[in-house]
Structure formats: structure tokens, C-alpha cells
Amino acid sequence: MKLADLDLTVGRRFSRADLEATFDRGMTGRGIEICYDEDDQRYLRLFSKETGPYADDVTSGQFTYIGEGRTGDQTLTAGNRILAETTDRPLPIYFFYQSPSDDRWEYQGLVDVVSYRRVYDDSEDRYIFEFTLQRRDETRERVDTEACAQDIQQPTRVETTRSRVIRNTAVSRELKELYGHQCQLCGDVRQRTPETPYVEAHHLQPLGRPHEGPDTAANLLVLCPNHHADFDYGMVSVDTGSLTVAHAYDRSLSGTKLSVAPDHPLADGFLTYHNREIADF
Image 1 (cartoon, rainbow, N blue to C red):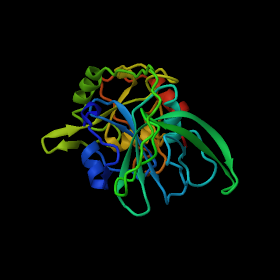
Image 2 (cartoon, rainbow, N blue to C red):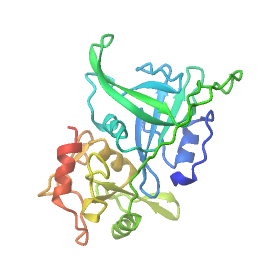
Image 3 (cartoon, one colour):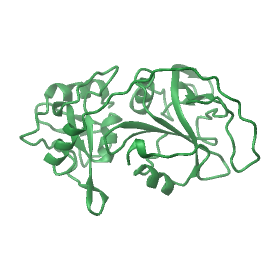
């Protein structure tokens, strides 16, 4: 799937199978999902339940979304960190909402992060992150497409300039071919179709603000989608000397070694950056 080919209609309802078919990937169960298209362009999927643990208020054009972390103080790591970084480095963020009366997910449109803050939640006796989100190109009330129609407030439109990092797909494509589309962490080869293998390229020091990592082979790993997500969420660290892997929850991977081909000029400095700035355990 390429982001440029997505054709989504606000109000459409998706089953889990529909979401997997549309985005070429299943749901992880997280509220904030870090995803990539086949050109390794990053995007986010946000999910909010009316009956969920955070009671997100999604009934207006600008609304509050509570960060990840159901127990203890929430931290600015994993999905919370990526969502916060979009205030400086915008990404496509696809927002989905589930009502109590429907097990499908209603697509609410693209959203942007206006601001975020860490606040104390008296009801749960802990600190949480509140993200102020704004629907792109609209300030309308949420429409229940299975109920009666209602008036839509016309938005105030302003001209804005947005920027995003353009990836060097030739570099990642060559690296994927070098590894035969095999994950450097687990060795698996996933398939997009029975005839077409699928693997993703991961930047150890992320591109753009605030990390400003380079788009070079020295900063790239070739990973299956599951372990790409684990690196993004900070669930993996790699010793720069021995290349020994430490995994936050998968004991079968802890103690194994990252596979690095002789022709792959992976730089220790980028592994160090990931371990220091991204890894979260």
C-alpha cells in the first residue's frame, strides 16, 4: 500500500479485516500505531473508543486525545513520543473512532497535533498526556452516518505550509535486496503476496526534527513489520560491540545477535543513538 493511493471517506466504518485490507497491515491493539507504507513513508493510525479507558472527547473539530499507558504515570516514550514529535515534524495521522453500539471503526479523517501537555489526573492518581488534535480542513461536528444527518459547520480556511522528509527509496530498496528481504532481527521473510516479499527499512536515528538522522545505509536496518514496530516503540536495544539484542518482552530474541551483512556499512553511532534516545527499558 502507498499512502498516495489511499482513498478514504470520512464516516466509512471498518471492520478489523477491512482495516487490514485497506492499509495492508492488521491492528496491534495499541491506541497509537506507528506504520509505514511500501515506500517506507511513516504514518500513524489513532484509535479511540467511547467505552475505552481514557474517555477521549472526539465530538468536535478540535478535541483531546489521551496518550498511551493504562497504568502508572504516562511517559513521553513509544507512541506518545512519536505523536508529540508531529508538532514539529508533521505526519499523516488517520483517526478512527468506535462507538459502544458498533464493533467497527468509523474513519474520522486526518488530524494534526496542535499541542500536548502532561497533567495530573485526580481520578486515576497519576500523570497523563493530553494531546489537542485538530481535524484537517474541517471544524465540523462528528456525524453519525447511521443516524439522521445534521448541519456541518463550514470551517475557517487559512493557507499553511507543511513539510515532510522525502526518503531516498533507492537506498532502502538496495539494502532490502542485499538481505533478500529478510528481517535482520528474526530472519523471517514476510510476503505481500505469494509472489512478492515484503520488508521495511528502519532509521535508527529518525529523520527530521528533533532527531535529524541521515537517510543513509549506515543508519538503516531491514526489519519485518512487527520488529520495525518494536524498534519504533523502543522495545529493542542492540549492543554496539557484540550486536547482542535485548528485547523488552520477547525472551526468544534477547541474547540473539543482529544480523549485519559484510556489505552493510552500519555505523555504531546510530545504534548508540537508538539505545540512548529511543529504547525504553
